[in-house]
Image 1 (tube, rainbow, N blue to C red):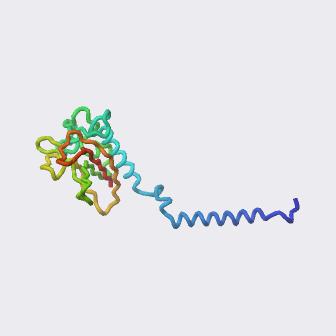
Image 2 (image 1 turned 90 degrees about the vertical axis):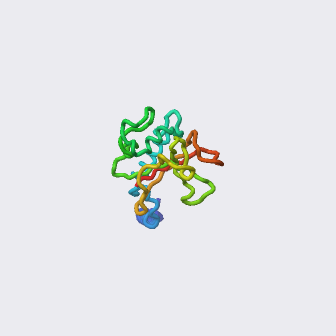
Image 3 (image 1 turned 180 degrees about the vertical axis):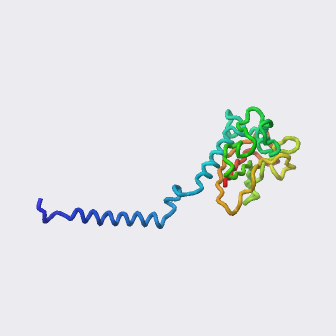
Length: 194
C-alpha cells in the first residue's frame, strides 16, 4: 500500500473521540435525569416503603396463605396504638415487636405512616380517600359511615417540607360494612416513608 494515499488514522481517531466525548458530556450535563436513579438520596426510602407494603399486604395483616386479604383481628391490633406490646399480638399474625417501626422491620431513623384507605370513585382530591376503621361493634367501616373505635392509620402525618416516598397495594377486607351502594370491600394500603 502506498503511504501517500493512506489516511491519517491517529489524527482522525483523536478528532472522532473528542467529538464523541463532548457529545456524551453534553448529554449528561444538560439532561440530569439520566443519572438521577444512581445519585438519588431517597433510594433507602423507596426500598423501605416498597418492602413494608409488600410485607404487610402479603401476610403480616393477614395470613400468608391468603395474601392481599386483611384479617380484621391482626389489622385491628396492628393499628391500635394502645396494644403496641408483644402480649397483645394474636397468634397467626405476621408481625411482632413493640412499635410500628419494629413491627415492620425499619430502623427508627426513618419515619413512617401506614394506612388502609377506601377509595370513593365519585369524589375527587383528598375527599376521595376515606380511612378504614372499626366501630364499637367490631364492624369494619370507613370514616364517614359511623363512629370509629380503632382507625386503620398509624404514624404521624408526612411533612410537606421533606421528600416522602409512597408505596401502595390493593387489598380486600372481608365482611366490611362500607355502606349502601358500595359493591367492593377493596382498600388501598398506603405506606409513606420520609
